[in-house]
Picture (cartoon, rainbow, N blue to C red):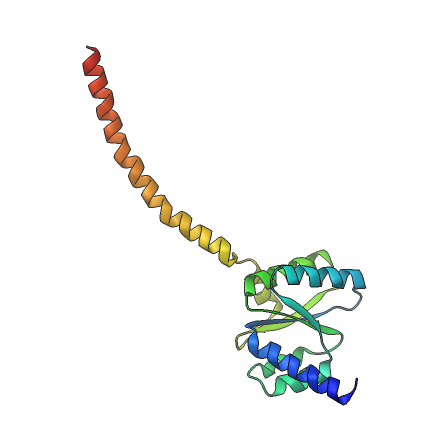
Length: 168
């Protein structure tokens, strides 16, 4: 890689780190090209991205950022997955890792907190933003439905009483 390309790579990694809330680091040793392409397509469809890194250059890029603790994770064939939506990205990577043992999560960082593999798995089990909104709307609608049901019961009973009286 030429010097200009290395500078561009370092600047690109810096911008990725500064612009995204969540960065996951994983090893991809043994993944075939089609498996890696499949992962990239899935990540793109979910609004996140995957980038294969060069460890030494990634460590240089991280040195000047507030996420410099992440540089300890860059050993071996590493790649990063990054997004501003932590739930979708963690679900995508953990599900892919469950189905393919060659992808090994190493860790990550969200905002300024280092994430272990266990924390990433916990994040992946949270509902997505759309699911949380649907649950909230369901909770808000439930009391209104109950009130409508309670109010309709007495009027229904009153109507039955009038109907019975009218038939006599």
